[in-house]
Length: 233
Image: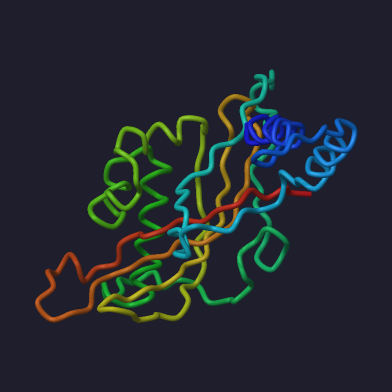
C-alpha cells in the first residue's frame, strides 16, 4: 500500500509544469519523466524505516505455538507414528546436563521449585486441566495475555501434549524481582493428522523478593514461554 500511494505522487511532482514568478518556461516532458523514473528506481520498499520509538518492544509471549492446519489424514488405529522426542544433547533435544530435577519437594523460592512449577504446568495441560495451568502464569493468568477460554482453545489442535523439563538455570535479580529460565521440550500429537509434533524452548519464571510481599508473590510464576518447532529427522 505504501508503494501504490507514493509512486504516482513522484510522477505527478516530476511532471508538473515548473514556473517561476513572472517567467514562463517550456517544460521538457522527456526530462521530467526521466527524473521521475530515477526517483522510482531509487525507492526500495524493503528498506527498513527508522523506528520512531527507540524503546524495544516487550518480548513476545507465545505459550503454545499451534501447528499449521493440514488436510486430515487417514491413519489406521494402532499404526500412528509413536512420539519419540529427540534425546538430550541431540538437535531438538534438551541440554545433556545430566542433572535431573529433584523429585522431592523443593523450597518454593528455589530454582528447583521453579522447575517443579513448569513440570506441574505441563502435567495439567496434558490432563486437559487448563484453568489451573493458566493460573500458574504471572498475575493469576493475566501474564499469558489470554483469557482462560482462549488459553484452553489454543490446545484444541492437539490430541496429546507432553513435556520434558530440564534443569533450571541460575537465578537473576532485578528491581525486587527474581528470574530463572527452565529448558523444556514439547512432544505432542496433532489431532487433525495424528502426526507427532515437537518443539524446544524455555520457560521464564519470576517471583517477588521484597519485604512485605505476600506469600503467593514470593512463589515462582510463569512470565514467558518461548518455543520453536523442531523437524525430527
